[in-house]
Amino acid sequence: MGKTQCALAGLVLTLGGLPALTWAADPAASASAQEVVAKVREAVQYLNAKGLAGFSDFNNNKDARWVWKDSYVFVYSCRDDVMIAHPLRPDLVGKPILQMRDDKDHALFQDMCKAAANPNGGWVEYWWPKPGEAKASRKISYVHSAPVSFKSDIQVGAGIYDDQLTPADLSRIVEDSAKPQKAVP
Image (cartoon, rainbow, N blue to C red; front, side, top):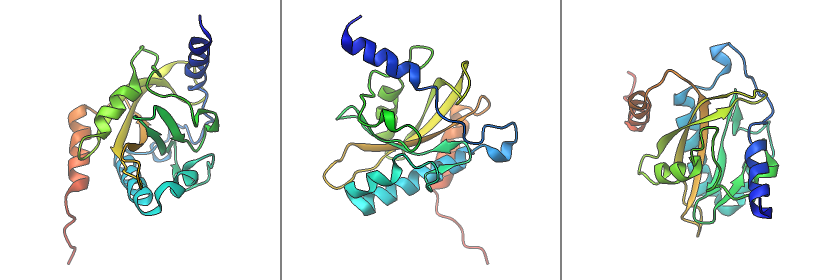
């Protein structure tokens, strides 16, 4: 195995070791798909307003507004093949992403790059160990493009561990959240 392959293998092996946030059986401690969509869209707006200076607000800060319950927002660039910001894993920042694979040998960031390019973003399913666990679980991340200053290829995402929601359910959540809210009399 070459030097690059060894480095990538080490990177893939360490990705499952995220520190536990609130991994509990209590559903209230788990982020919902609706919260993930709202947080990702909030992050897109935040980066649009802050520009490149906003990246640092997503890095290495588990107490920031971008980390909640058992989820967090991460920022990456497909064109540059790099993790730009990660609140819990500073060791991933600056690392290549396009060759990362899940436990079923699925190139997850390649799919994330495609899904985030859709006008309303999109969901990507992959298998990843929950923090502190060795066995992979179904994880679903919502990803969306976030053009920032002169970098039109920036994307943000956040995910949930869920084995119940279907792709149709997730699509409805995105569509419903994009509809204008009716005024309450």
